[in-house]
Figure 1 (cartoon, rainbow, N blue to C red):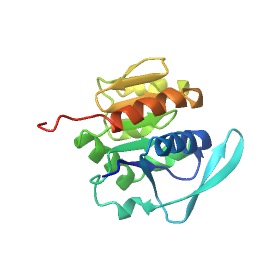
Figure 2 (figure 1 turned 120 degrees about the horizontal axis):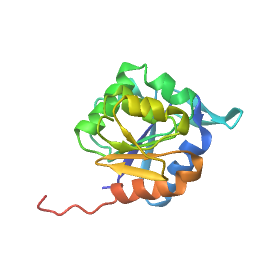
Figure 3 (figure 1 turned 180 degrees about the vertical axis):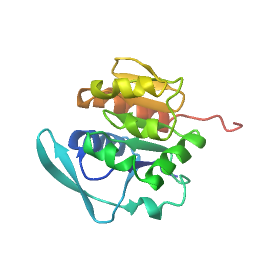
Figure 4 (figure 1 turned 120 degrees about the vertical axis):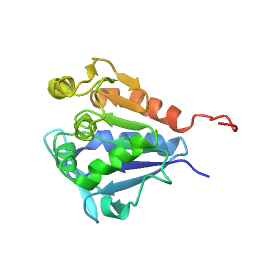
Length: 181
């Protein structure tokens, strides 16, 4: 059975932080599914203006639980996670992936969702520099490095980190688990 990653995003996601990891996952043979607040399409933010659109596969209300998914990808951008973190169902999805012990990969401003889901206390994480105080205030041990991995949480700082961020997520999704586990 193919591995599958949910990409939770809405309008204002950082273009490269959704499209590049999505392509990297698919190149590794991993299926992706875009889940958003509304059906139709969502629009990226690209540096200083609106960018490309992407088709939404499901809405958050269409997702009963995290079964059938192997990991959760949270792209950043400033607008996207700020809109998602005030949606109860979006935050519940993040909590469900965590409760199931499945990898959650958050880049740039997306760790705001981890804060909202109350998942950062005592964890070593990284993020975009402007939200590091938010992370520390929520109890995270904040580091400035390309990728920080603590338990099932994978975090990165910005678009420059996408290759390492994608590689870490791909390796976690494709991990071989002993058959007797």
